[in-house]
Length: 47
Image 1 (cartoon, rainbow, N blue to C red):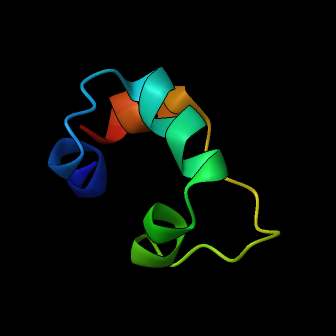
Image 2 (tube, rainbow, N blue to C red):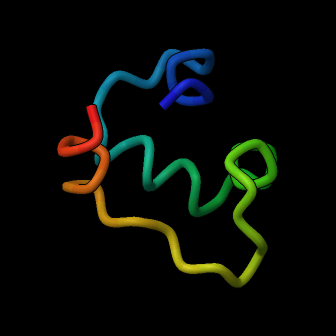
Image 3 (cartoon, one colour):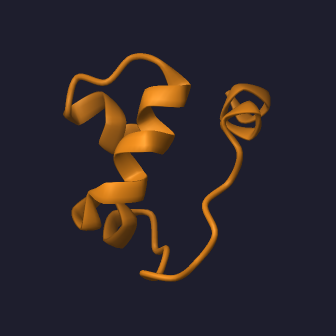
């Protein structure tokens, strides 16, 4: 969520889509290239 905020991304579904293609966000969140990202509903529950 912090990386999404720094890029100006407000919506959770957009953050997940951006993390799918942006390697910098994956690296920052400690996800590997082939790791599965959490569902967008997980971000809402965490927040």
